[in-house]
Amino acid sequence: MKERTILAMLAVLGMLLAANLLRSAPAVANGQVAEAGPVQAVLRARLIELVDEKGQTRAQLKVEPDGAAVFRMRDARGTIRVKLGASEDGSGLLLLDHETEPAIHLLARNRGTTLTLSEKGKEKRVIMP
Image 1 (tube, rainbow, N blue to C red):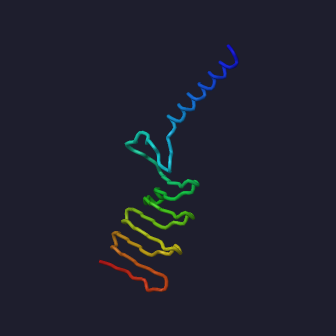
Image 2: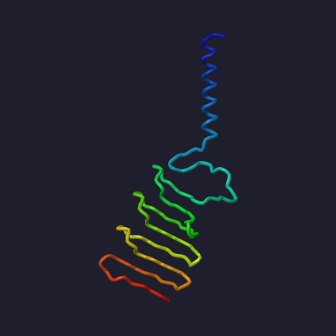
Image 3: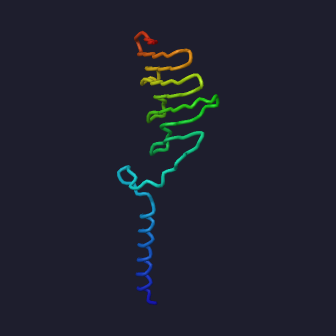
């Protein structure tokens, strides 16, 4: 075969391989996935982490050693800003302010339910039914 024919065949083969790779890989454009893969009926794990494009953990769902299930959400710096938990004693929601101080703390436990509102420089307010 002539060198020109071989080069043309290699170019066509390369384009076919590239087209196949692009077709089979998940297409990402503007931060969106073009097609989702198959959906699993059940996902079992002891820890699930959501990470941002830099690989930093932004949200975490795990079972703690004491058996409590806890969901934590973090800001871009990795600071926990939201915590939601469930245990045998009940459940709780904690929203942290810009200084990571508890701003809203809601507890629903077997000893009772409380809503605590806090703001720096102001008196803490506890609401009980």
